[in-house]
Image (cartoon, rainbow, N blue to C red; front, side, top):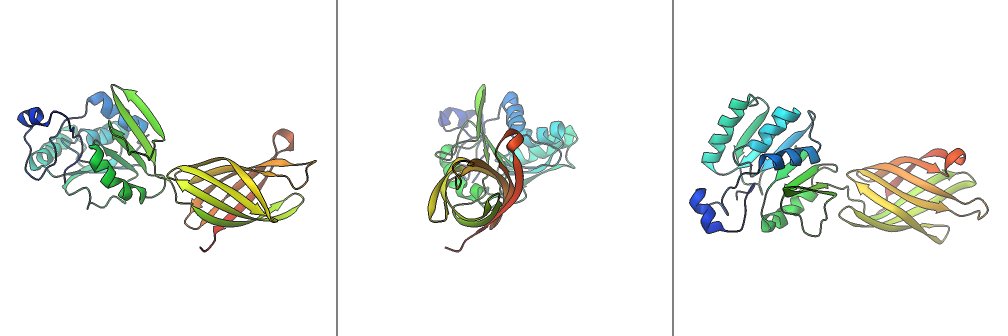
Length: 275
């Protein structure tokens, strides 16, 4: 399976202009330079990143990631002619010590080293690839030229000549979590019941046989935040602003209680409860 920079329309015409082998789904179409720049900008690529370009074509995205942003990375491609061209282009750009190009099927390649995934794929390939992308380390950035990931809505969408979509792989937090909160007015045992649709969260808290709504719920990579109202004393109720990180079966961070001069801060920790 060869992906990257493929375009489904007008295939017959494109085949005349771009040779393609029998094992490839659709012809290679180069990503315009301004779109390459925008993809890397939107993904916030930096020297600390390992970029994997799925369907790397002539190598231009990965080469620019190394040359302009200092990143390392690997391009995954099946076309032998394009692989040879990308290796030659990397050498000419002086970044062949920072990037590699491999002949691999993107559905079999090990994507786990990536901190950034770049791709220009047709919708049916995106659909097949999406389950693999969701298993990547939370916080991995995925940037796509032209085509989205269906009902996994992007965290950002930018348009400069073409659409560029950004997703940040979310931690998986659906389920029940238990926390004992050391709050003013006494400790509170809380069970958080969370529902998740990609990076969209919903849920409630249960404490002292009360159901407490959770507000402003967000997850971005491993970072989670939400608000719960401590209303045990109606004369002195206050909002609890939770911010934290997810590490497997543990969420922990800081609570800001109240606002302004009345604000206090305290740690919190929640553990995933067995089903």
